[in-house]
Image 1 (cartoon, one colour):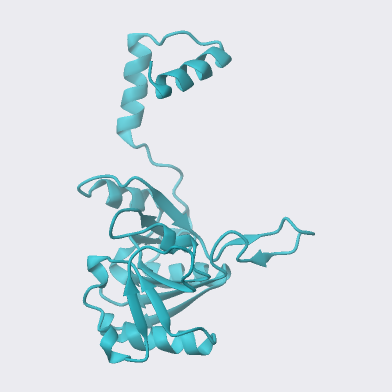
Image 2 (cartoon, rainbow, N blue to C red):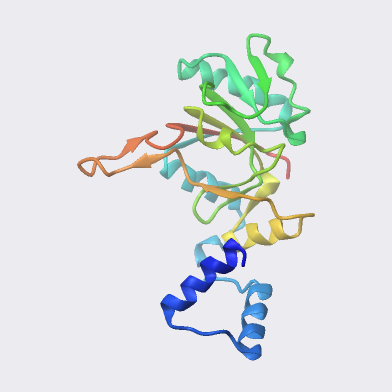
Length: 220
């Protein structure tokens, strides 16, 4: 018996359930394969999902710069780092979507690629999707998308294309399922890390980045 079978068997025993019949198994398989959609909020019925995304992101302490193309990304990144008095050093995801960013436009920036080992103050990644419903970023894992860059650097910079913004969570899942393969991990990130555990006071950066900045590329 595999570890998975052992765990599921213990859960069934705890629930007082025996083996499932054929009809019950078929019903469960149909439900899993059907990808039934949840409640769709009416507020996403708007022609300007980009602005809705930016507005909701701002409510959770995310700053956004809107640029015309990837050529503008180095300038905005360098300006943001200077504004926040941060070192001009970036750990960038080895994502093909970022390969055409002309970092040499700003020679004062030190750019290295790869996952983070926890020593990098600033990490930059691309997002898979932006969800206007809550101003949330959908990030998938993989060799080109190290999950460590989402959580270990104190400052998380994200390049998001306007064409990647969707209305609802279901829309983002549909886009992910349409790809070649599902990633091992999917992270939903809504603003910097925060907690209110200590005296009900919101504290940023408790379990991850204390700053999040999005460079929104108007490619649509």
